[in-house]
Image 1: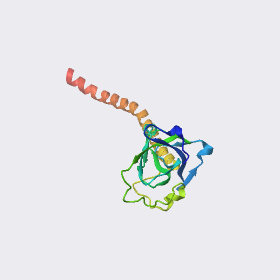
Image 2: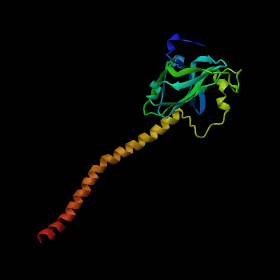
Image 3: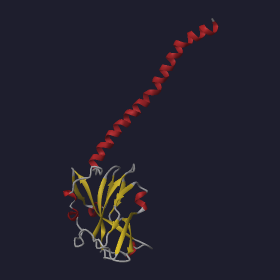
Length: 205
């Protein structure tokens, strides 16, 4: 679905960014990427991305998903993996900025590189729900799932609060460094004044 021949590579197909879901006020919210044109993923922030294209996987073909190197080099981490035979729908991946700078994401940016493998025979085990189509956010039931305590989805507001605390700490460190040199010089001068008469008395009687 939404196939674009320009996204065909020698051994893979590039799937593009279609929609972005972010956390706002502790709830998932669709970001209007069509209207805003781009989204700045801040350091520490996590989002869910649905691809522009949809897949309809046959019984005898499996897929492998990898993040394009462009994003990895900017500090983007993601969770995804194999595409089971008979899967239908968009690809949904969680992205997190583990770098130090914001990363700008544009609509229909190539995001995932998908390669396909022809199986020797049809798999014995079937995809969990081969008749379901995962083309909409509601199909994922994310809101109903218990949150994995090891997976923390940070919103832009939470990131701002963390960065604000670090900025206060940074100013404190700068203040300490600013006054440290004069204090050290004062201590050194005081020691010289106190010790010099003693050294003079020892050396010259």
